[in-house]
Each structure stands twice: as structure tokens, then as C-alpha cells.
Image 1 (spheres, helix red, strand yellow):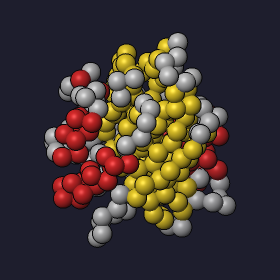
Image 2: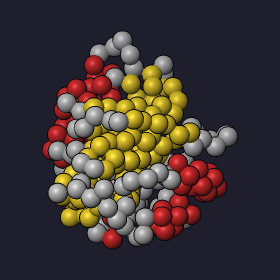
Image 3: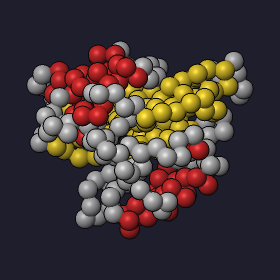
Image 4: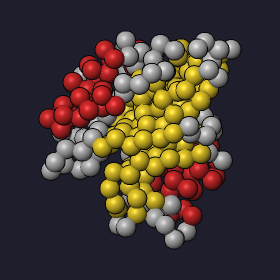
Length: 240
């Protein structure tokens, strides 16, 4: 049996839009129109004990009935800051791998495992550094973290606007199945006038891409400094 899933990667910039206002409800409105099954978010900040909107991970999970996992990279004004993965299916397990480089902002990759039919799908949500040498160091550790059995999806903000070591390494690892094959001219940053391709989705041959697009609604153009990258994938869940 083939199962269709919609995935999205979205750097939400702490919910701060191009108008400099922090409004996580705008991010929620964007996700509401996308209707994704798996959502990989970066730059999410969540504060305990304040309003629901202040805990951005819980707010988005509860608004849409998602299961959620947080991969904390650091503290931000007393809150938890990092990557968040949302899913319509419960997680079999999760693991956060630190990719931080000394002297640079803390980074990491959040792995979440989701059972679909006879497969356990491994979803990797990452946000890499802005420095060239920093990403070179992170590439090796990221590839090591990706060595698992079963189908994989890797999503995130790779901060690499040229074909550097990370891009070339992942293209080799995933046999050129990056969605840039479907979106050769796609750019996600900055959202108001996208010039750079920072956000990517890679997947194993277990999946077949039906379509992909950059979500460019009026709200998405202002809600964050990145646009969401959306992909519809088919997985053969009957094959062991």
C-alpha cells in the first residue's frame, strides 16, 4: 500500500515577522493552510508558565492536534530554543544530536522515528551554522547521525546558499533526491524577496516525490524571514 504524506520545513524566526512583531499565531495561520503531516520547525522558542502562545511548541501542537518533540540547542531569555518536529503520528522514539562548534552558536539535529506500515521512518530536523568552516565540521557529524536503517527524511535550514560540502555530501548520500530536482529555481530567504536557497528536503528512494512548492501566501511573506518549503511524498508502506 502506498501512503502519501505532506512534509514541510519552516524556519519561523521565533515567530518574529518582517514587521519585527513576534506573533506565533501568524505561523499557526500559515501551517493551517499547508495541512502538513510532518512539520520541521527551526528557531522555535518556548517559555514555561506564561501564556500558551509563549510556549510556541505547545501552542502549535495543541492548535492542530500534533504530537511534538523539542530538540533544545540553547536557552533564550529563560525559554527553550531550538528545533521542533510536529507529527500527526506518535513518535516511536526521539534523539537530539549536538552539532555545535566551539565559539559558534549552538546547533543540532533532532531525530524522530515514526512508524508507517512496515516501515519506521526516521525524520531528521536540523539547523546548521552560518560559517563555511563551521558547516564543514557539522557535515561529518550530521552524516554520522543519519546512519540508520529504514527510510529517512532530512529537513531544515542548512544555511548553505552555494553547493558546499554539506550540500554535496547530502546529494551523494541521498542519490540526488533533493527536491531541488523539482524546484530548480526555488528560493526561501528572505521571505519578502527570496534570493537564497537555504532550506532543503532530502529523502531516501523509499519515497517518490509527487510535488513540491514554496508556500507564498500573504501571511507567509511577513510571518517569518523564511518561506515554508512543502513536499508531497509517497511511501510504499507494504514493503518490509
